[in-house]
Image 1 (cartoon, rainbow, N blue to C red):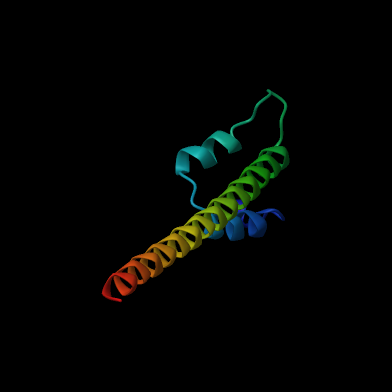
Image 2 (cartoon, rainbow, N blue to C red; image 1 turned 60 degrees about the vertical axis):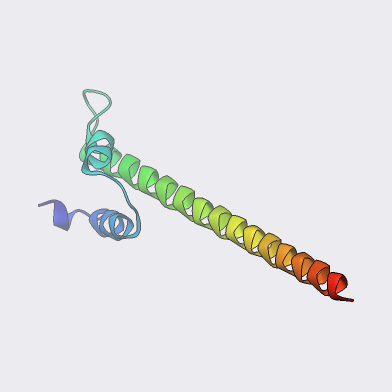
Length: 90
């Protein structure tokens, strides 16, 4: 069975760590040439899953960075408004 293949544990772990569709998995498992074996298909799937995982990590980092920048801008705007209000009262 597929669970007994040496690469299955790697595939299983990566599937748990990534958000890929069944269609993406199937596409990567389909042989690209007539004489391709299961090992080559699994290795291609592993590479695709690792790429997907890295892309998701980079996207999350970029989103966190953008959120931090937006938060900093809001804090700066609030400070500016408070200073204007404070200067207007003087």
